[in-house]
Every structure is written in structure tokens, then in C-alpha cells.
Image (cartoon, helix red, strand yellow):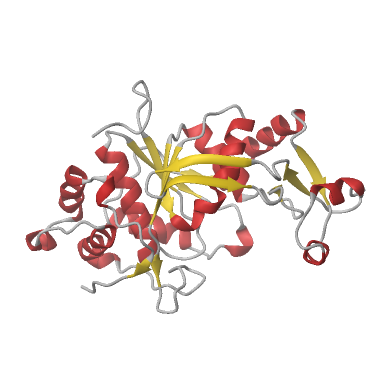
Length: 297
């Protein structure tokens, strides 16, 4: 199996959940897919807690997520990082971008943006916010076009419709900035995550280069859908994983991804099931369709 990175680099992948609720089956599919792709390529798999937005976090969710990963024997190969402890890195990145004239303050309200049919940089620069007005920081990328290959979705072309926010009016750092800064700092060179994040990949690739880094390879795994056709998520009240049946959960996740463990493995510990899967992991076998979970154990 060929390496997804340069021959001189070791594969470094990651799983980065947000503590807005406990781990559910859709999250497990992403965790398992990213873990197996890293292990199968002789790489390191890291866990990072994306706890950037306190108002949206559920008390105790981070600890429940980490407990669930341990129960399924999905172990981070480096100490777990917490975004809430990395604000100094995001501030430094914003300063780098400011020095390159790639950011600007934006005082536009949601109502103004709605009435204008979307944010436009020219409107914002024409009427810049004064020092007394709460303002966000945006990244100059509107109109830029990005071309890249996704591991499962092939050739992609994405055009940035509007400049993304890097720091919100309330002072919180935005996901788009933090995820890129963290991947650079941790040396992540292959990102395997859910297909719901495919559309923001182009902007993130632009940020990587603006910060002087080569973008990683990206691969977007299929989403587990609920009965109404929505992505299974914490916001849609997805059922929390039952950590007491970790092997069964892993078998379901592998079947969803397109792999079918033999029946005898249902009696094994999670580590044996994961070792079986890592030895047989082939990207072309992954079923990339977003769909309902068909198999119930």
C-alpha cells in the first residue's frame, strides 16, 4: 500500500471531536476510518478536542467522548490536545495574516448580510467599523478558486463565495482558523473526516498556504443519515454510543464503511477487531455514499 505523503514524511492523522454531546455512531465511523487509514499506512493517529465554543458545549461531554474512545480502544498516540489551551497559537496566526494584509475587520450584522444577499468585502471596506463597534476578523479569499483531489470524492473545484470569519465579534476564534493552525502545529499531513466538511476544504487549503504551510491530503468519509435524510449528529439528538458493546459498535462501523468482519470476531476484544481491519484496510473498498445505517446488531 502506497503512502499518502512524501516518502520522507510519516503519516500523521487525527480525530477532532467537539464536546457538544457524547460520541454517537456517525462520529465513531469517522474515528474508525481516520484511525485505520493512519495505522494501515504506518502512521500516527492523534486526538484533539475542539472545545472552542463554550456556549455550545455540553458539561462533561469531553470526558464522555474520551471515555468512549478508550472503551473502543481507539488510543491517541500522542497526548490529547485541547483547543481551549491553544489561544496563543491562534493569536499568533492572526498576526501573521495581518502582516500580509490578508485580514480585515468586519462589523456587518447578520441582518445586513441577509439583506445584501451575502457578505461582500467591498461593502465592508467601504464602511469599516469604528473602534467602539464590535467587529469580527475576516480572511481575504472571496472569489478564489481551489482545485484538489479528495481520497474518496476525486477531483474537486471550490470557489470561495465570501470571506470567512477567523475571529468572531464575541472574541471567540473560528473553527476555520483553529483547525488549520492546529494541523500545522501538530504536523498533520492527512485529514480523514466526514463528508459534511468537504465544502470548507478549499478555504482551509488557502489558509494553510497563507500561513506558509503545505496543505495536507484530504479524504471525506460517508455520513450516517437519520430517517429524515439528515446527517446523524448531536444537534439532531443522535443516540449516544453504548460503550459496553464496543465490539458490536465497531463491527457496525466497519460494515458501514464497506468492510465485513467474520462472525467469530464478534466475540473478540476491540483491539483484535481493529487489528484485523487495519491489516485489510483498502481505501477503494470504502463505500463513499451517505446513507442510512442498514445493519442492526
